[in-house]
Length: 170
Image 1 (cartoon, rainbow, N blue to C red):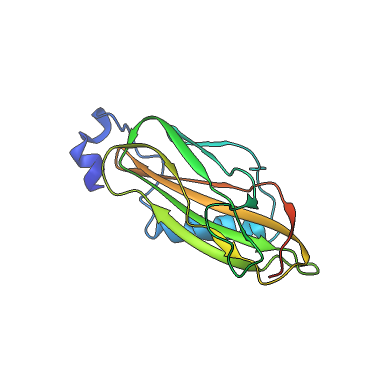
Image 2 (image 1 turned 45 degrees about the vertical axis):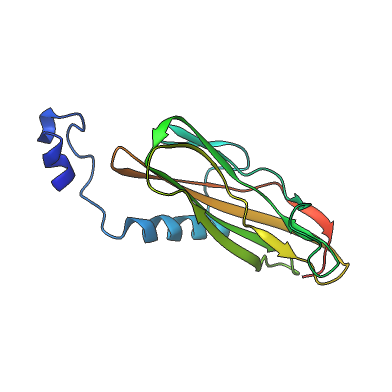
């Protein structure tokens, strides 16, 4: 309610609150997106998704060429990208690279990267790299949860790159 007060209560730019303040909002959003991954119904998010004044794109799972050769078998990953119409306070990406193992999708690797606080208009996550341990055809999938802070509010979006089969043992 402090932010609402700072903006002039209902007469200010925020108007009336739509809900009570949600304590622990980050964990609620993460739980929501995890539920989606576990088969609960949700909107499709395979392409570009808008959140606040920004858009997030998962980009494609591919062989990483600038991450070295890993253990001699290659490096797989993807580079999610957020761009905004106006500058925002921060952009954060939390990404998982997963692989199909029978009927499950365990995590191969997780990575988080974010901008420093301050005006920012775009961000590409570059630290999601999985070093293959051998040559076995493996289907990979992924998820990125994007978080932006704009105008004192936090916005979330989740996107999923298309699955890709690579000759990469996990």
